[in-house]
Amino acid sequence: MAEPEVLGGEQAGSRAPAAAARWLPTRFLVSELELIFRRRRNLAGLAVLAVVPIILAVAVKTAGGGGGGPDFIDAILGNGLFVAFAALTLELPLFLPLAVATIAGDSVAGEANIGTLRYLLTVPAGRTRLLVVKYAAITVFAFAAALLVALVGSVIGLALFGGGEMVLLSGTTTSFAGAVGRLLLTVAYVGCGLAALGAIGLFVSTLTEQPIGATVAVVLINLMMIICDTIEQLSWLHPWLLTHWWTAFGGLLRDPMATAELERGLLTFAAYAVVFWLLAWARFTTKDVTS
Image 1 (cartoon, rainbow, N blue to C red):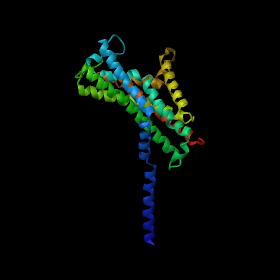
Image 2 (tube, one colour):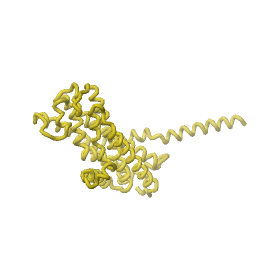
Image 3 (cartoon, helix red, strand yellow):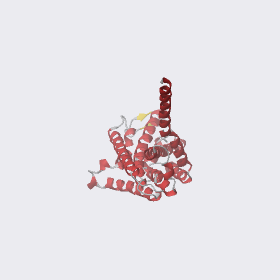
Image 4 (cartoon, one colour):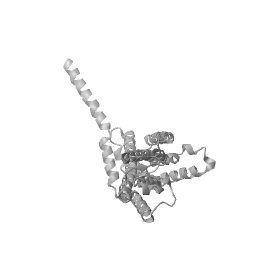
């Protein structure tokens, strides 16, 4: 009688890890990322993002100097790494959000549009697992897009303007290694903000079967928040807008670092990500999937 119990325990023990292994989204995530980064339209979008810092650096080089504009642009002549900071600032209002909106809007609506959504839901732990993987892929793309802009900006900036010690916005200097560290923190911060926008896109994508419509809706939401942030009469609303905190990474270029706005920005990003992912989950888990 003891042997069957032992065998039964072994079988039960083997089934539990197997079930857990089936739920783990690693293989699914890798497949999703391959799909995202192999699509020509996505590669074309990334290419556009990469061109902006090149145009910026060449324009500043040929013009021979500042002439107004954001502090980051005026500082490019002093250190080429500022091209990366300036490019991120210039691309945040439209180009980076558009790239993320394209991926997020296509995440669920795209599958429904081509008729593969029902097939994906046949795997174990269907809908929740699908949303986890889709949002993870959106987040990876958001960070990759920000990193690409920073990397291209750094390379072209250092090639045209050189590097060395960086004069911060506060007037003090930091080493080249310290400047690179601040740039990496900036990329991480921008990536978090874009990932929060991606959560909005994921939710919108569960509401429709038209990925283009979802993408347009996310872009319009982003532009609406930017417009609201410029209206003084809506100052009470500004701290609650996602876009209000996107450029708070300027505090990383001061000595000491101004972290108050960064912390508030990260909390806002986290709140948007959690709320809209849960809204996407609530909508998708009760949705009648027909395609």
